[in-house]
Image (tube, rainbow, N blue to C red; front, side):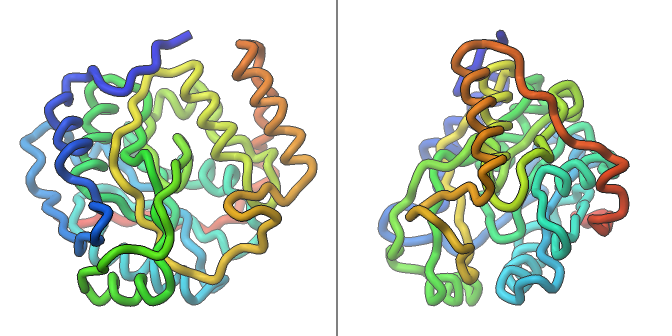
Length: 283
């Protein structure tokens, strides 16, 4: 079993900065977006990094608008490859992520949902941690969901004074995480056995934390507003009973050290179901 460490890579100085100084939210306000992708100091070759983004297509106008804004104002100058996976058809997050990873060229994969963003300095630290030899890294510990009005203000580059929603603890493999190509392939990636919404992020987080070396940083992930999913609980839901059963198998394997369930991703089954666009973002 691989040692799981929060800090301790060669990028320790950057981790400290991301954890202690550069939180996206401070508790009193949300910082307007600001990225300086050119300030890398040669630690990471931009050609080694691919961003795999799960985008809504025309399925949700609010999420589409959020992604177009984030792509333009956050990702546009990072210098990385951008792989956009259209998820407007049959929804299966695991299969969609697999489709994007299959076409990505990078040795380092940044897996991201279309409606979230993190302080670029925390994300930079996560990428550097993986570039330095760790298997995975998550730039944020917590998630803050902006309301509809807060999202509108944020997208207008206004300072948001406080948020209606309190931060909550995020997933290791949730809306934004970084993983090496080697780790992704050896682990099998996110399991496509989870149908509908929920469970796959928790399951893959179990795999990463038990079997691979990584770091969870202290950044804050911002979730831009869109009409909510139908949910059975206040925060998280797994819509499918089969997904609940599969997640329980992952939980038991995680706690017991036993064998993981067989990953149900079959490339032939999902071929062509997720249109993928590959582009190079200019720095």
